[in-house]
Image (tube, rainbow, N blue to C red):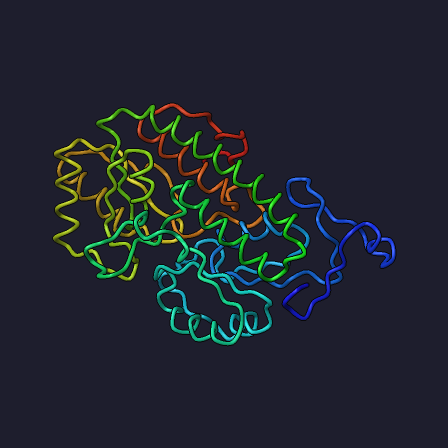
Length: 329
């Protein structure tokens, strides 16, 4: 039975007796009918998207952090606290991504189901960072293979909350993981067309290390793995010299980070007679606008892989893997 206060009615006979309507999961699998959906609150949009894909109509999901929001600096508001207190399940990333919320979330976990889903990943599969002793790079969603492990943790958290819906959660997860695997294959295919000497990804902060490892790119972030770190003038000057010496033609801005430092690099290179363009805006710590393809995890990574490929002289479909990217992506 449900571990929350909500009652769920399962099975065709129960549906007929209750007068409820049989619902569908996001990939067409039958979903158990619910009198009231399970209330799930998540920190990031990526977690919310996975919870919706897995839970279908059995869940009602609210993400605290929307498009363009930086999770490293985000602090919970009064309305956030009210939403979490009223939820049946709270899902957060962990690995020190929500640095300003971590104490609150760990304290809340003593009173209600509050799960750090990325903490389930094996430590030997995570990247460490010299700037953060005993901590790991949290940006695991940049590698679809690693993100699949987080999706499984989200599924398990939902099953723990509503074990009678396990069949639906399992079926939806299987279908969703197949889509994520296909996305990873697409990214590998198009990014492999980028000339080897052009496989340098320079962005506003160090969010793409898992991407670099998965797709054989050298990754350079102006700031560290947290946007709370600062980029000094010496760092900017060194990166300008690198752009000039290695003849790097494109750098990238991020949707959730100020473009100030990236533009400083472009101007610094221009002052030395080297033209660098902004290759596009990438989604790093947040997805695109709600209601768009880029506002899903699949669309977010499709956009990034396609945009990087185009900017660095590789070959990719104009509108991505499924021909769904917005014009100009």
